[in-house]
Structures are given as C-alpha cells and as structure tokens.
Amino acid sequence: MTTITPDNLNAVMEFHHVIRVNEDLTIDEHVDLFAPDLEQNEVEEGKWEESMYDTEWSLLSGFSGQDRYTGPMMHESEYIGGGLAAHILATPGYWVAIYPTVTDIDGEELVEDSWAVAFKAL
Image (cartoon, rainbow, N blue to C red):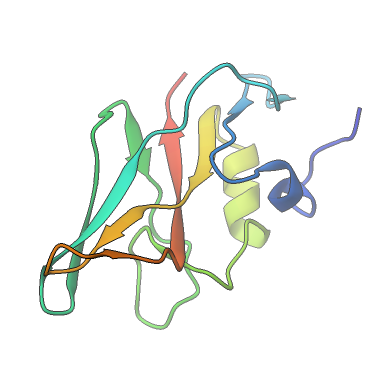
C-alpha cells in the first residue's frame, strides 16, 4: 500500500473518483459513493454560477492560483498539490475532483476547461 501524501494525492484523486479521509486521517481510495453532478451556467454575459443538486456536497473555494479569484473553479493547468492537498488530507470527509457540465448564456454546452473539488462530511 502506498502512503498518500500531498505530493502524490493528485495521482490518487482521479476525476469523479471519490476518496474518504477518515477521522484518524487514513485514506480509503475505493469508496462506494458516486461523485456529485456539477453544473456551471453563464447567467449573464461573463458571469458564471455553479450549482449541485446533491446538497450534502459543497464546493471547496479559496485554493485556486488564479489572479484575484477565490471561487471554487480551478483552471485546467492547476492540480491537487501543495496547500490544497494538505487541506484535503487533514480534513475528514469524502473528497472528489469533478468536471462541471458547462452551459453558456445561449444554452449551448461548452467543452470543459475548468474543474472543482467537492467535499461531503462523514
């Protein structure tokens, strides 16, 4: 069994693959739980809104390295490492990296180029 650290968590957290951080901070990689569906919709020109139907899950904010942005959506070039990985590994609960379904203001579905981390309490 490989020890999971902030340096290798990105490889463990494949998209839409839920992991569990237990109370004793051990990690279960094989969790029988579906990832939540995330939608990102353009509500007016250049203004986006994220939503999930499963209200037991929440999106993690404040870890993006994007200039002056503190929301939940991560740029495609970002990864689960550093402070984000340390936070996940120190916080008991269910964690998953997810791509949203993205729809523009005209109702057209766009190609995913951002992602987010969702959390559900134990």
